[in-house]
Length: 118
Image (cartoon, rainbow, N blue to C red; front, side):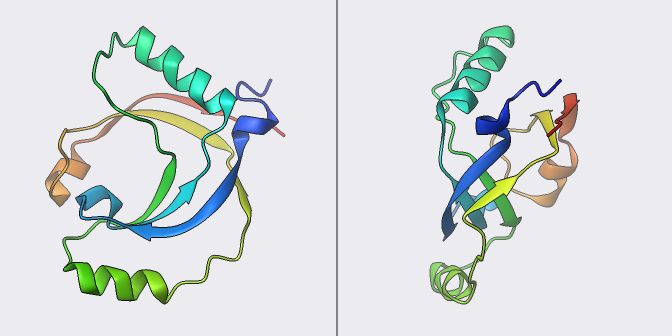
């Protein structure tokens, strides 16, 4: 059974972007839908997470510390050809926060995983 349902498994792409966050140096930004918001709330409730984290679904393409001009140039050089992306697996990952270097990423641990059908 598909635990997410089609609306959450397939996410609309909003484009390529960049930031000064190590884990979002270069990334594909996705639109947040109602079902994904519900799943996030369920996970936060189960984990008793009281942080003020705001879910902004994305797919990181690069983890690196780079000057803003280099990030902008790299972002502008990429044309992302898909209006939506389908996912076949969902994983919950316990992350070091803040994640600032490679060793922090290597310390991440998958705490739950689910195959998505459809």
